[in-house]
Length: 342
Image (cartoon, rainbow, N blue to C red; front, side):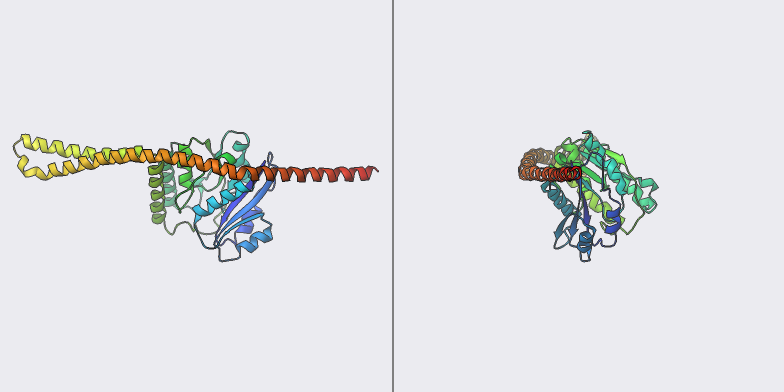
């Protein structure tokens, strides 16, 4: 069983050593632990520091591409390197590295394919009151959109089984955290959450410049993901609201007409007709989007199979090399033992 811990990095030369030192070096049930960083166009000495620390693998971008692109590049690299479990953590040492042992346990026990660490948001001192409320609100919206019960959707401290990682597909360029939960809920991936610990703040978040920016970009991701994965429900809800307003205005005009004052309210009749047509068209758009979503599901299945075909031979080769290395080590131990006995 091979675990790869991936760390997205952007100018993290100061915090990476502390983060790396906090990571587990041995876990029961895991044969091999390796570390991978995604250098997202860093302009400092992040790569040199990673090499000095002895991090096994480095995926490097020439320029900054954002958290979502970096995350998916790391997942793809981990799959090609033969990972059975992939853990994602942050380079700012926000999360307690020792909790990785707890995070991977449901996967080792075959109880889940995706595990998300639940931060103690209300007890986190460096989170403002406003940020705490928005974190809870965002998680509540994601729970509705994904039909899951994950309490901390924005948490980036996660563990994925190989099967779950093969099915991941992030389309937005902002963050992977929200979309992957909605995607997992739609694809019926076994998903669970565990309480974790957090460390003191080492630096300010670079993901957003202000709370308003965070809310706006997160709302865009959620709405877009909801439209992609549950289009019929989304467009039918919007269409029903518009259609209902049109009906209300139409009834209002009929009442005025029965009272003999309909001539002065023709505008209401015109607006009602327009809203009824828009509402009906929105229903039609929902049906078409649902057909597109069905095609998207087929494409995701094809992507999954292609990934599996690409990665499985490499996975088997990595396992074979690891087994041969173990055998050679055992042979050397046996030779040493015979030499001692002799």
